[in-house]
Length: 232
Image (cartoon, rainbow, N blue to C red; front, side):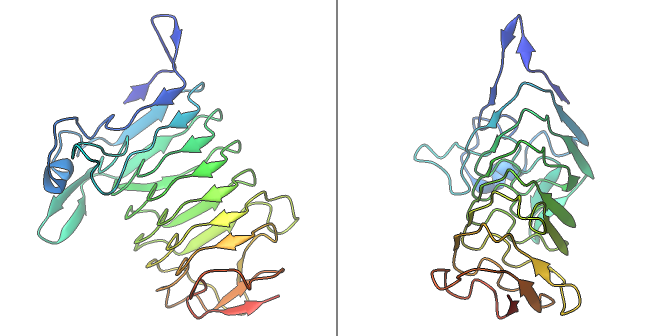
């Protein structure tokens, strides 16, 4: 699937919700049982700046989903079932990935563009990602953004080591229920620019033993570190 940034001479800068979910779904099971479950590749062309917010919980009309929600996946008795190894090419122009944008999609890897500033709530909830690199220009990671990524072992925050990261906020449950794996010799390095981390952000990662973070953490949420030892 090739998504252009110009159609009929008109510039497109925003991709709306329900782009692949379908506007007539009225239940969660119908949302997952869509006609886009076998898509293998999506290319979003340069010029697109925003993937609009969708919602994990259905909106008031019961018909609102993230732009690429459940693409490459199906939904069965055992939950979300990946059907393809979905790959996505994001443009350098992209600055905002909205809520639930890739929620429950079968995406296994993705390169987030360097200009990206915001990752929305549930943006990559329950995907097949095994690693993710957060660019230094990202300022906000929303609630539940990468929750329940059961293959996710590593998260790299670009700019954490040299102090160039602009990240200030990590939402509640953002990396909850993954398999992040860091020990005393290789701790998870968080940027010193962070001012807020929500409740249980890194909870339920049994192999996350050590986190390296300088600065004051007194205002951070309940069990944000999931019991991991904090190294200043």
